[in-house]
Length: 375
Length: 77
Image (cartoon, rainbow over all chains, first blue to last red; front, side, top):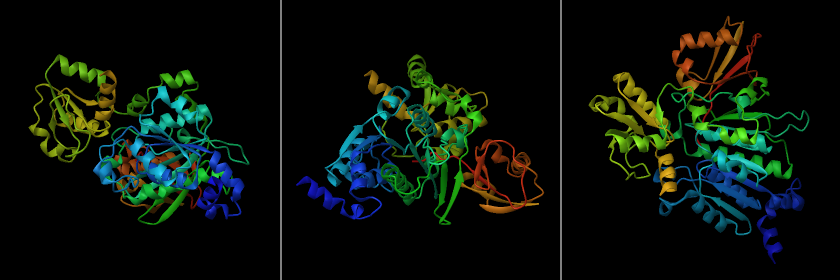
């Protein structure tokens, strides 16, 4: 009975002579991990589940916020405050109960990455920061897994496949061949800072699912060793061919042990002159002395912080209000992930060159994770 | 000798244009110096360079009508 049901469910793609029952069987046996159930992850997950990918892993430690709904199309108003990994898996189960969904309600780190990635054939990167992108890339190189990369900003998106050998030349390239060095914090802008047109991650995430299904079924030519840049305003696509960079081995962790020791936060902040504090340093500092803590997130952003007192000066108002800040005590600035707070520290140091100001590395998300663990 | 420039993302915002022509530029090093002088914000912005769609890391001498694309990394997801 189940076979008949399945056959009906997948009839339209089995009808494609390039896929057929053989291709559908390959899809049913495939294991795909989607890291980040956000703007890119939601559409990628929906199409992979709909197509019948047998095992799908969903990694996300975040909760649904109102500001996500404009582009993260798996979620509804009722889901606000709930875990994205859990809510996404519930929605995907309703869409296709015939497949297995693995839930990873956690942040991907050096310690857990290899163990998790090992269980899947294809990895989809839908993360939202450079440290995680380099971490996923390196893990995929070490484990020899194809990585379908996607990234978005404003009206533009990028998609490409790393670590998949070209069928003819057998050449493989990765993220470090394209961008050997992470950008400085000043130029590392994210959707939180500058916004994103909601359909962009929809388009790029759907293209990531497309490439995954092409690799699984062997249909067509996967986007290996290439990256496409899409611009919605011009409705234009431009493709780049990535060449293996002989000089890149310098920074790359060459063994699993080196990978475990690699500090991705530090690697991605190393071009910055800003000073930052780890969660542990911050917690011990605020217990030792009276410090001024400033939240530079916009009004109403989650999570709500209740472990200490702070003042709220959204980054958008920071320059105008910076002179009202007392620099008598040491200052620690935080935001969601540590990028905006680093900018705020820069502004503070411009106005008060001698002030003692720090940015909370990893932001309040990192603080919450560490403090939940220790509770 | 003319070359064609294409800029993406933040690079297009800094330069204020996404496609234009430049003359008298011999290689990628000279191009970067020239662009950073014109647009100082580029010196603190990271981007990759592709010559005729191929991403390059080392200095490349240009030929007439080459297309040079400037692609910054994005992190949004």
